[in-house]
Image 1 (cartoon, rainbow, N blue to C red):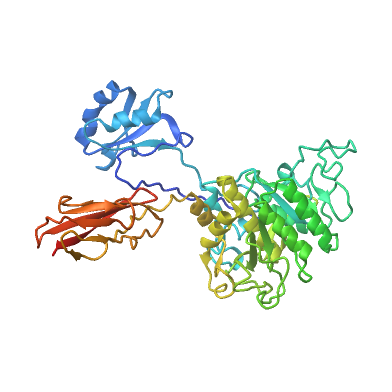
Image 2: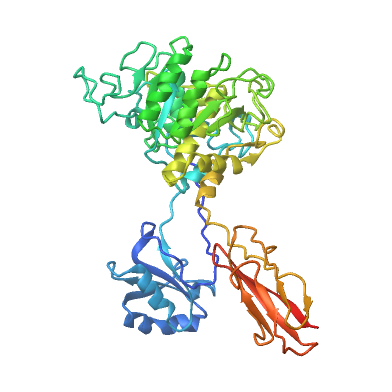
Length: 537
């Protein structure tokens, strides 16, 4: 059992701001006080004069914003708290109030909370989640878990832990253990027809039975980092505190197992719909059967998080499997320390290891309701597996490539990993979560290019060329050519193509100059125009 230590409540203030030009803040019905809005006026006089008008549009009560017994600053005196019937539509009421004379700003009365630091007993010892410099660590050498949890604490995403099994009775894990809905417990029948009898909570591929209980500690430890329950006043908390753990035991009590059992476990997880698998193991040479299983996982859209290995070697030159398999759905993870160094044991590889994550002296669950600190890339990988599952919880439509990109593109730059991993950085859970929630970039307009000015004889024809028009973030979908004087220079054909034919009238006057305009439209509907001059010879 882990020795109890003093913990202190960490409280962070939540600051909110709105950037934009509208005086009405967008409303989120789940995060504000029903029947209440806050209104800022352009002056105290406007605020005082608005009480009667507010009641005319349905406000029941108007009061000043208190600061102590009375608003004490000029800005505070311009704010009013307005209460209305809770069943009224918030957005409609905000719009009504915004139309009153002198209103500068309208917003919901948001509910704010303590920053999402859970009350789990040993949370202060989870430096990988939240590093405050405890035990000689470096402040913020962590994955920014509490910052991410302000947005989302977890979600029901199925994560297969392919390992030594899991203590499904552990009080910090029991609520998050997968239950096979297709199987009836104890009837001795393979109800779901998958070849495994009474596999109600996974499978033990070592003993070939339906009890994947952990007799080593390792799989339970990995599972706690991914999905230990949070805010239960007990022990530790996982990266995704509501993830669903599928225990698949293929490693024995001694910590070893066969590739065949690993392959079976992977296919089992694919069939049962796991979105993420954690592989905190490795060894042996290249295996085609293992590679084929990973190919199947890739085809099924599963994110495969794999420990890079603990030999302090370069996986680029000395491959470590399965980490060194080249499947696009693999995220290979090195280990970092509480001071943001690469752990001395951790493997690395500029092209074969993707990123780092906390993996040294990591506290997590172990069988028998206990807790212990382990070190290894085995401990780093589940931080990333938990992160992948949290991103899926935030947006279940994400595919494996989007999840991997979000995680890899949002790392914290880390000097110890520069030149040692693909990203040169350490996992940042909050940044990864923000990456998938960011609005799409504004569309860039196309660039029209009508070509150079030309001179044509009376009655002559020419083919113009607008094919050099471009769109940096899309494609050109339409062209439109218009002559400024159609009786002098006429677009004969191809007016909606890149290369139209024009003709000069035989009766045109020499020296006449006609402007021909090209307008192009891109795949987002943006347009751009360019002109060329046609001089009649």
